[in-house]
Amino acid sequence: MMRAWILPMLLVLCGSVVATEMIVMGRPGSAAVLLVMFVLLAVVHSALVFPRSVGELEAQRRSAVDGGPVVYWRPGCKYCLRLRIRLGRDARQLHWVDIWCDPAGAATVREANGGNETVPTVVVSGRPHTNPDPAWVRGQLTSPT
Image (tube, rainbow, N blue to C red; front, top):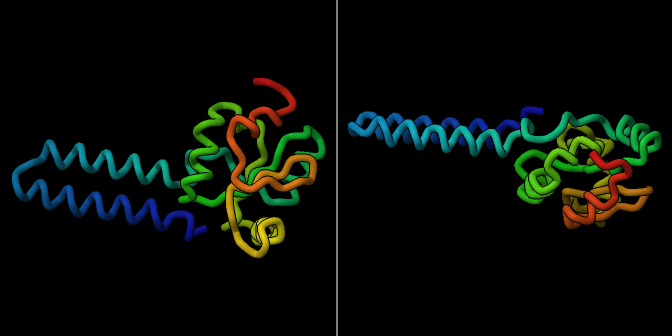
């Protein structure tokens, strides 16, 4: 779990250092704007923008009940972020598995991608799809919001 927060923590730390330097140079307004930008980048690259992740077994169980796709992802992945943002509110209908928190999920992704942990990997009806188009994923949802 700690690995998921390394990039966001580094972004906040770097932003703080640069903002402090700008304050020392007499530019507090610019420092505040820069710090806010770094914090926003940290939030976007954290797990906070994704629906709550569940374990692989729980995601598969839920998918069997409601037919929703299972999305294997990891924090800091720009393609996962693109998928999440483009799905908007529909992202809540999918079952999200953070492969950095769930070794079984990581193993499933490696199996589907020839040994690579390529994400996002979306499993629909038992078939994996690596980095699918968000519009296609939206089309796989069984019930509209």
